[in-house]
Length: 200
Image (tube, rainbow, N blue to C red; front, top):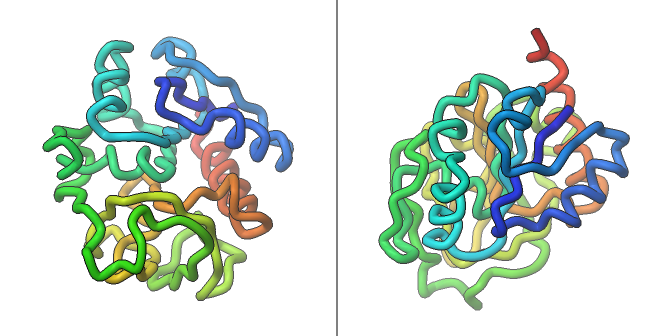
């Protein structure tokens, strides 16, 4: 079962619908005890980093998310929260990954970056199995992670940024797989497969 973290900063309904579409078992919860029993965790995210971290702190979820030993997928803001900090409100984040989330460059045609954009995958990983090396996904964001050693794929909006990443049991996508049609459902199905492989 996949646990979807409910912390008032997520696109819970669309993520739930996408998980139902691939036939995945899931629950939505803000309780550490229940989430700890799941085979994997999805940390969704729509909104701003300061409020998101406040909500995670109020629910006692920060230590759990920092130390989880099963697959965790951060989506959009959920991926950004995996880093040390964000320029958005000068926010301290989960610090699973080194680095600071930056505001999109002024070279971007429009901020926030919204709509379909091509992702070019630059590394192999089970999360992106079955996806073309260049494929389109749906984005909605104003802040980005720079390209780094965890980057699986990049996209461009005034600058090249990390669109997908993997580090140990942590995965992240800046785009919204639940709104990205067949390619997005493939990402979620691949994540579900990773979760099943981690079952004790």
